[in-house]
Length: 266
Image 1 (cartoon, rainbow, N blue to C red):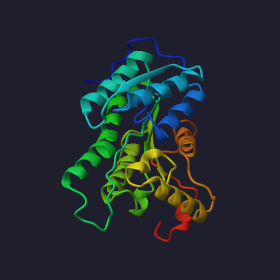
Image 2 (cartoon, rainbow, N blue to C red):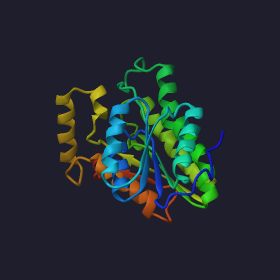
Image 3 (tube, rainbow, N blue to C red):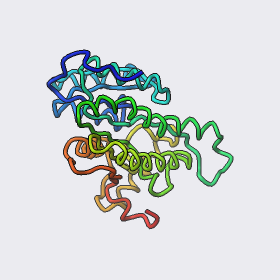
C-alpha cells in the first residue's frame, strides 16, 4: 500500500505531518508549524483528547488540521497515516518523526531491561521512523522536494538517558538519519535534532515531581546558556531544519543549551 496521490488538488499551504504530536515536543512543533501558516497532520497513539486539543490550538492560527491515530511501530498504520494526509491535502512537505517511547531503568542494573523492552523501544524509535519515512517518500519524490526531521536525543551521543535501550535506539536513529540522508537525496533532506534534558511530562514515568525539579535546576546551573531546554526551543530547531536549512542534510543537531560543553563525556 502506497500513499494516495493526486486524489485532490494540492493545498496552497505546505503540509507537515508530525508523529507523536499530542504532547511535549510534538505538540510544540505542531503549534510552531501552524503559526507559520502550515497545515498540520497531528498523529497520536493513545491520547485522543490531547491530540484534539492540539488541533484546536493549531486551528486558532488559521490553518487546517488532520488528527489521525496510528501506532508507528505498525507499517500498515504508517502507510495509512501518509495516505490520509495525502487524501486531505494532496501533499506532504515535511515529516517530523517525533513519536518515541522508553523504559526507565538504571544503566548499571543489567537485569532491569528485558529483550521485550528493547524490542518495544526499537520498534517505535527506530523501525517506526523508518516506516514513516518509507510511507511519505513517494509523495515527496513525486513533488521533487521534501524534508524529514527525526527527534533523536542527547542520549544517542553520550549513552546517558532514561535507559541504555533508549540511548541505543536513538544512536540507531542517528545512523538511520545519515543513511537515508544519502539514499534519498537530492529530493529529500533528512536531519535529526538531539535534545538534552527537556522540561516535559516525559520524565514523570521515571521520577517524582521533586526529583524532576531538582534535575531541572541542576541542569540550568551547569549548562552555558543557564536555562532548561523547553519543547518550544526544540520546535524552533526542528522548524529551521525542515524549512530554512536548504543546504543541510544528514545533520545531527544538538539542542541542549550547551550541555555538551559542560559534560566531560559529551
